[in-house]
Image (cartoon, rainbow, N blue to C red; front, top):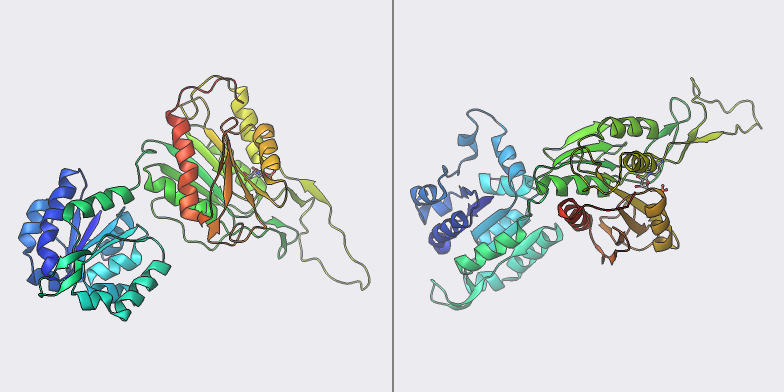
Length: 414
Ligand code: C5P
């Protein structure tokens, strides 16, 4: 994790935060602002964190110009303690004018701020607005400030939270590494089925759910392969990406990587049909008055194929164990009878879990940032998940998968 220290009188307490984090087993990279260096010695934080402290963007990259980006991407949490009013303002403005704010803008890790400032600064409408702005960007968490007498003589909210409280809040945000040692494959996005060199049959999937699943699995320590249909999304760092266009290509990519996978999560919206033939040249609208018709043929059902393959390999095994078949998770985008349809798919495709969503519901489905799903399986289990960000939905799915991977052998399913 990265611990940012900004320049306020409470910066001296960051030494205790580092000490407690190290005692809890965290690897801590301290990043100080220029102003913080006036309040606490770099040497103190370096000794306690057992890592060189970073301050200057331009010092970092003797060996690599991009190392601040790598540092931001590899962080599992960005904790800033103390977070001054100035730092919060710079974060809210999206500024990247020093190493700490640059890391904050790059990282996708949760941001935990422990504010500390004068009471009037804390209560100022601009500070409130800045925090609100940051909150809208998501992944913002606050610990404190506490109330009491402040260094400036005022009394009220503005004290840095107790270091032990800050460390407990940080621990609560760090993802469990319960998928460490697991190889998982996630499919994402739509498939495009070409009609001719310029046209295709597609669907409205954006790939967001699948990309969130891949990022969440990587954060939990898994080695992740993301098989992605056409999408503009930027893949999460550290994830192997295999780009495909059609269902047949997706099937080949998944089948080739099946062996050795602990879990396969099929969140892609695979086209059920494809044009029977792809015209070698663009279809013409002439002669006038004639409308061409397109004959469709069925695409392979990739998930059902994986379910059959796993069933053929034997029953009564621990899911995800080497050579015994991966945990299989399907998605079911439905418009009516959501749970019944999903339960049928769970049975027919022989998977362990089906994540069902009503794509017509507000805040759910293809283009939304959020999703409201029901997670069915294993067996009769049925969990209705409230409307959540797709990142959080992804973690709920991995919670289930992780429980299956650690649980007793599954008898008779498949
Ligand atoms: O049958 P339906 O398309 O609703 O099933 C959805 C689930 O099956 C998803 O997990 C999707 O990725 C998978 N699927 C597949 N191959 C298809 C169609 C769907 O693997 N041809």
